[in-house]
Image (cartoon, rainbow, N blue to C red):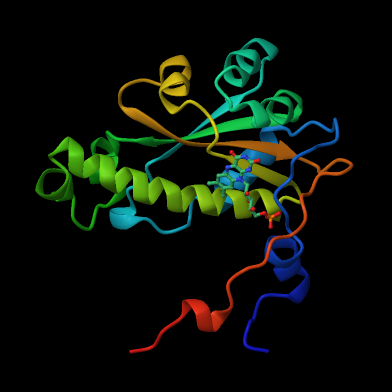
Length: 196
Ligand SMILES: Cc1cc2nc3c(=O)[nH]c(=O)nc-3n(C[C@H](O)[C@H](O)[C@H](O)COP(=O)(O)O)c2cc1C
């Protein structure tokens, strides 16, 4: 009993949580997305830079514009999901740093004056936040279908700008019939963990 989290919550977030490929028609509301964000925003990032940005693709017209950039195998489920979110990294996150990291407001200029440095840091930290977001979706009793099978430059041009780099597209909803592929194995502890 090394884990203090309630076993039912462990199952909800990890053991029984799956990547969904089909969804019911039940809508995902803005209130649910806000509750998810207001939970996962506390996940840690370097200098509290929180570079993740989320674009909710709701209108049928926007959904159509997104689907055309998805890999063929991802198109039908992205067209049908109750909600789709484009997760991106804000490469200009440093503008917010004096407010977000008041312990060391100079971090903006000392560490993040150069764009390539910001891009690397934003990619890493927004990816962390994307993982928190997926777990947050599960905490709301929903399922996520994260995807990187899409034309990144196409999505960036269609929905974002030069300062934002797409990370992944996430389908969100209640899992529908035949939502899962077979569960794949995971590496065992001893295959992954070394102690020095
Ligand atoms: C960053 C990321 C990108 C992924 N891209 C795709 C994708 O483009 N298409 C797809 O069908 N599944 C995609 N997946 C789903 C993974 O294959 C799936 O999450 C993994 O096999 C674990 O499945 P499980 O949660 O059902 O155990 C992606 C998952 C992640 C986290």
